[in-house]
Length: 66
Image 1 (cartoon, rainbow, N blue to C red):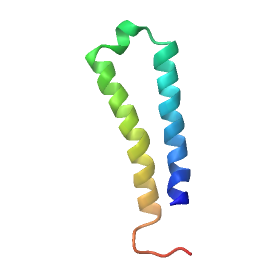
Image 2 (image 1 turned 30 degrees about the vertical axis):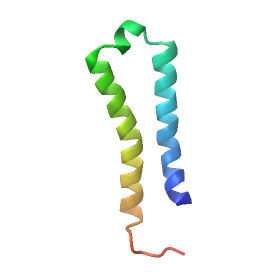
Image 3 (image 1 turned 180 degrees about the vertical axis):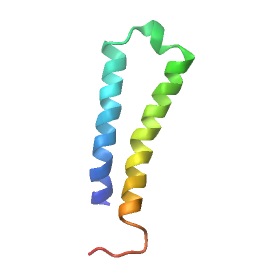
């Protein structure tokens, strides 16, 4: 489980950076538009799913790496 968390740290940092950018840099008029809401959801999903897929491909279930 610790190895999976090491993969997710980068994704979590991307989510935090995007949230800070959205809060402090991007005007509120843009953040309420439909395309930006979809972009926010896509960034969040990709920042979590991509590291999980990379972890799965490098460490398939059922293989004991101890």
